[in-house]
Every structure is written in C-alpha cells, then in structure tokens.
Amino acid sequence: MKKILLIVLLLSITICFNNLMAQKDTLKNEVADFGFMFFPIEFPSIENDALNEQLQAFGFPSANYPKACIGVGWQASYNRYIATFSFNQTTKRNVQSDYLSKTSYRSFSLNIGYDLLKYPYFSIYPYAGYKSGRLNYLCRDALTSESSFDNYFKTDLKYKEITNFRSHIDLGMGFSCQTNGAMINFRFGYLFPLEKVRWKMNDNQMELTNSPSIYYNYYFSIIVGMGYMDVH
Image (cartoon, rainbow, N blue to C red; front, side, top):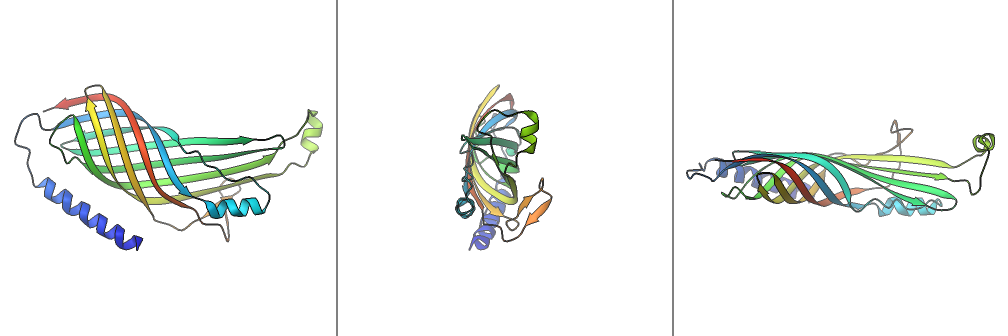
C-alpha cells in the first residue's frame, strides 16, 4: 500500500511541476530569489515500541528519543524553485542512581520544491527529496559511591550501545513567510523507507541479527532563518 501511495504522490508532484514550469511569470514583483541560513526545530514521529519492549524484557530502560530536535540548515529559492538542506541532532538523557541511558536522534535532509504562489513574501510549496534518520541508544551502569581510579577500572560495569540508520524518500508540504532579512517556515513531511531495518553495534561496524522493527513515520518542523531576498 505504501509503495502504491508513493508512486501516486511522485506522479502527482511530477505532473504538478511540469504544469507549473509551463506557466511563465508575466507580472513584475511576482518572483523572489532568496537565501536563508536557518535553525530548525524538528518534531519527529518514530515508532519504536518493539525496541522498547525488548529492552524492558532484558532489564534495560526504554529508548525515549527526544521529541524536539534542533539543527541548522540552508534554504535557497530561484525562479520559484526552493531547495532546502538541513541537519538536526539532539540527545535525551535519563540519569538514575545506578545507571545512565542516552538516546540520540540525528537527521539529514535534502529536497527541492516549487512555490505555488505568485507572491514574493509568502510561499506554499510541495517538496520531494531525501531524508535519513539515525537513532543511537546507549546504557551503562554507574557507580553509586565514590571510587578510586584503580577500583573504577577494576569494576565490571554493564555497557550497551546500538545504532540504527535508515534512508527515506521525503514527501511534504511547506509554508513560509519571508522578508529581506528574516524568514519563518513550517514544514510537514511523510517518510517512505528505502532500506530494511538494521541495528548495529561496535561503533556501528557490526550488524545485529533478528533486530526489532523501527519506523520513522513523519515529522513537523518549525524554521526561523536570516538571509537576503531579491524581488524582481
């Protein structure tokens, strides 16, 4: 079902782009070329219930990923085409008296869209591109009292770390408001996986078999940027 939906969406966007490219802007002050460096806040939706069930069964805390992730990126527009690059990374920590766990989320995206509005200060644009998602889970024992240097390295402390990486086709819609100097942007994207689920260990070098499933479903981003705009 997802493959059929993906094909339909890709065909729809292609047809839409072709029709829009055939329409020439004939009035002045309709097009704005701009470039903005921005700082996004991404709200990912990740389905990792199967992972948490297995972690809890083994006596480990759940992998509670950060619900809001900060990052940096660049957005540029030329002749109503809008290209966007962004990188986000945030870590959520869970510190208890006898253990420390950390779950880190990282994403990278590169996509291109087309502005449907003939007005330079507002943009509504469908976009398509590539987006990766990475989840890293680490849990280790912590000493409950002070210790000497020798005793610390002689103590057998439990340590587990696993990493998942997955590539996706990214289809979404954006709305932005921009002036010469500032921009605010809202984006919603749905993700279609390009590869199967893989969990790895040993600094992401060895794959774990029979790994639990995880799905990076969709995301919502709020973007604030600063840069330049040229209306012509």
